[in-house]
Image (cartoon, helix red, strand yellow):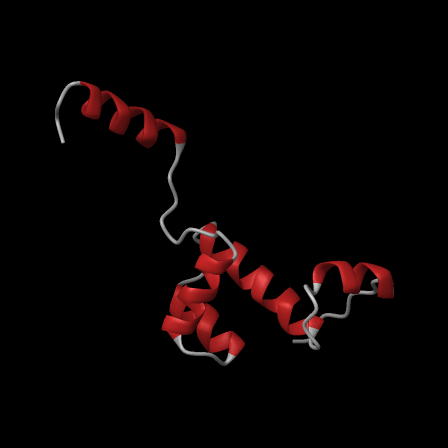
Length: 87
């Protein structure tokens, strides 16, 4: 399946961070968000982007996207455990 999205050139320049292939950048951003939300695996994302899984994980880090989702409830529990000395 192919999806076409119309975007003004000015928008493409803003989101492409100077890369010569902004469509690759958009695909990466979509794949990263799908991984972050648990919709696809990092392996599937790397396969879709035609890059290695380690390279995909490295790029996710460069974008500040975590592969370990943390919800607020889990974070609160971790803080309480740390405060109580339960490491």
